[in-house]
Each structure stands twice: as structure tokens, then as C-alpha cells.
Length: 73
Image (cartoon, rainbow, N blue to C red):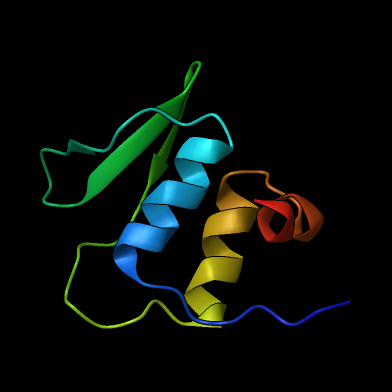
């Protein structure tokens, strides 16, 4: 199985939108979130650095997104 590679914040948002999530909204506790139906997925703030593979793995797990889905978008 191909390894996950770091992505930019804008690439993370683009991929999540392609997976059916709405545009990011600012959360009350400082972290943005994206919604798909009734499900809310919290995403990291944009700090200008790539989002590493470990954090991507945690986001995919939280969002119930398979690695194959992620790599296909």
C-alpha cells in the first residue's frame, strides 16, 4: 500500500472537499471544521507548514475515510 505523504493545508482542504465535505468553517475553540452531512471533522489550523503523515492518518481515522479513498482524490 502506498505511503501517505505530507500535504499543504490547501491540499488537505481540496482533498476533503472532493470527498464530500463542505467548505471549512471557523470553530468556537479556534480550530476550523468541515462537515459532511451530520458529521463534523475538525482540521488543523494553517501554520504554513505541511501536514505530516501521522496527522493525516488521525484525520482519516476521525473522518472514517479509507487510505484508498484519500489516495484516489
